Structure formats: C-alpha cells, structure tokens
Image (cartoon, rainbow, N blue to C red; front, side, top):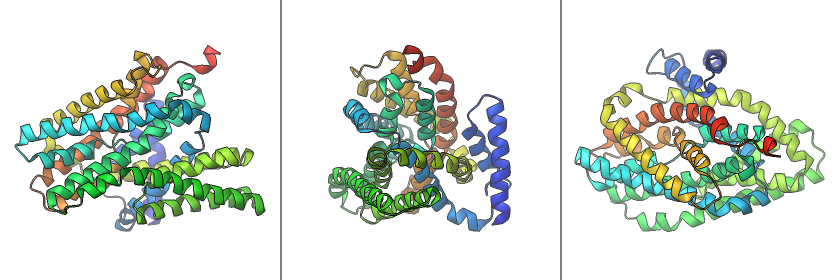
Length: 392
C-alpha cells in the first residue's frame, strides 16, 4: 500500500507539473498518469488500494464540494437560481435522448438500452468542473454575471437528475417495475439532500460556537460532518452531493470569519486530494474496452455533446449572458468522469445484451471529454469571460 501511495504522490505531482509547464490543465496529466499506472498498463497500484478507490474518490470529491459550497452565498443563489435549475435538467434531457436515438439507430438495440447509455453520458463531472470554477471565481473571470457559481450550482443537480433517469430506464430494462417511484422521488432527493446539509451545517455552527476547537480540529469536524451527510444521503436515497454543498453554504452564511479559515484549510487539503482523485479515476479507465467502441462510440459521444450544447444555449437564453459566455457554459458541460466510471459497468453486470457496448462508450467518454473539457475551459476562459476586476 505504501508503494502505491508513493507512486501516486510522486508520479502524480510530476505529471501535473509537466502538463502545467506545457500550459495544459494539470488534471489531464493526472488522469493520464492514472491510466498508465493502473491495472491495464504498468499495473503499479496494489489491488488493496484499487479496492478502496471508490471511497478515496468520494472523500476527495467531498473536499472539493465543500469548497464549492463555501463559495455560494444567498444573494448569488437568488440571482442565478432559475437559470441554474434549467442548466441542471435541459442539457441532460437533450443529450440523453439524442444518444438514445443514435444508439438505437446505429446498433439496432432497444430504446431502453439507448436511454440507459444516454443518461450515463448525460452526467457531468463535478470532479473536473468544480476545481476550474473555483479557480475562475478566485481570478474574477465571469464573476460579474456569476457564471462560475451558476455552473457550480447546476453540476450537482445535473448528476442527481441523470443518475435517477439512468436508474429509471435500467429498472424498466430489467423489469423491476419501480420506474415511476424513482422518477417521483427526484424532487425529494434534491430537497432532502439540501435540507440534510443545512441541518448538519446548523449543528456544526452551534458546535463551533460552544466548543473551543483549534483550527485543525474544526477542519476535521467539518470533513467528518460532510462524510456523515454523504453516508446518510446514500442510506436514505437523498443527494449526498447537494448535502455537502449545502453544508458549506450554511457555514459561509453563519460562521463568518471561521468559514474563511476553513476554506483555506480545505484549499491545502485539495493539493493532495486532487492527486488521488484524478489518478484513481484514470486507473479505473479500461482503455482496451474503450478502444472497442471505436469511431462509432466517438460519433455517439460527439452527437450527445452537440445536443447538450443546444440544451445549454436554451437554458441560458434571456439570462443576461452574451453568446461568448453561453459558449463557455457549453464547454463547461463537456467533462465526464466520476459517474461514468462508477455506473458504466452496471448494465453489463445486470446482463443487458448491449452491456459491453454501453461500457465501452462510457469509458471512451471519459478519455475524450475529460481532457477536452479541461483543456477547453483553460484555453477559453480568459478569451470568452470578462474580468470583473477590469470592468470595475
């Protein structure tokens, strides 16, 4: 296990720095490093660490979502709420059903299997998107129209919606008969996740006010609380992602200077957490399986992104964004990684005839869209977004 940790820390840092020196996003270097050291290439990571990989990725994701929540205040949410809600649903619907139709046409498969693939691909990756949006917020790019906050808020709800739709169609395909119940549960999952996070945050604020804790102890209490709401969300079928972001949000509203101190601590933790998150995502990518999808798989992914972009344009229509800013929002909706790695293999495991093809396209989507989205965001942000500081 120690050898694997050493490989991740040293090779990950090297890969990140090499790509940064080439003016490319460091996370692309981390994902590629993960692919190379993973079980499908040089196999430098021990099986014990790979078995823990899902839990480690969740913990790293918790850290970045807490940072996102600590950057959302009530005034901002009031301004962007309706647009963020549209961005959470419309792009996923457009992409999901476009992929379903093309998959049905190209593979002569069932509509249900096409819809299953469609909503696997429809989930964006907070792991890729959130760090970039936080960086843009710190640099002031797009802050005049709250574009980073809008994308942050929509990303978590998008995942809830896409995963729920995937579960609905998968249930119909295997005959569980619970599709209507799962679809009706979506508002409860979203509202319940927010309420759970707000409640945990309020309790944490009371603890901070009553107990004399050192800064490091407060940070540990915050991460422990975020992990707890994630587990409770899983147990009660509520959105753990939204619960974690809501926890950070209520701390920003109620904890004052302490929230700023906690955010600084999370920033330091993220320096190490990102190495594990993106390298383990890369290690989960089975390149030989992705290769089987070939040009047809690439065509399906490209078609889905085109229709997703149409959904983004409709969602941001009359929102006050100009076309350049809308175009940036389209690219910000490209990256896919965590959800596809987590659920791409479920249709195959449940015995669906098209399971192998679905898995291949899901894996290919990570290889194509994570680097494409990351590079696109880094390159386009200073060209398409306005600097709030310069405008002032």
